[in-house]
Structure formats: C-alpha cells, structure tokens
Length: 83
Image 1 (cartoon, one colour):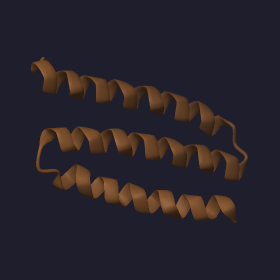
Image 2 (cartoon, rainbow, N blue to C red):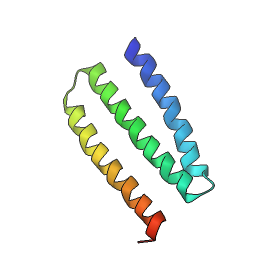
Image 3 (cartoon, rainbow, N blue to C red):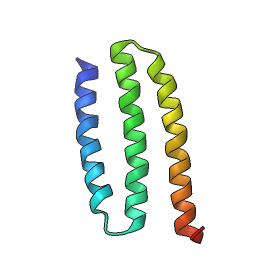
Image 4 (cartoon, rainbow, N blue to C red):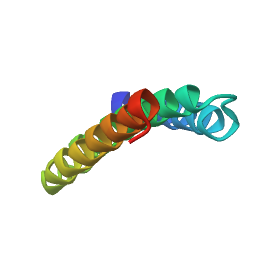
C-alpha cells in the first residue's frame, strides 16, 4: 500500500512538473522543470521496480538518469554560453 500511495503522489508531481515544462515563461524555468521531471521519473521507475520486484528496472533507471543528467547539463551549457 505504501508503494501505491507514493506512486500516485509522484504521478501528480510529474503532471505538475510537465505543466511547468510546457508553460514555463523562460528557458531557465523549462530546464529546471526538465531536471525535476527527470528526477521524479527516476523515483517512479525505482518504485515500480520495488513494487513489481523486477530488478531490470533499476538498470533502466540508471541509464535514464545518465541521459537526464546529460540533457540538463547540455541545456545549462546552452543557456550559459549559447553553444
């Protein structure tokens, strides 16, 4: 029951973060929302791995975390220097 409640809370937070990502007034707001979405989706994947007892999901979460980190870093670099 604990995992289900946390999954529901994370889904609500994901939808709120998606709203901020789509409606963010500046590029900086969108980059921060992207980073938050990445972290929340990682937490959701890990909770699903624990709920369904599938450890393969943890490998997927690791790869997704690396991609999210690289994406946030590239966007931050773009904002800072304009690549």
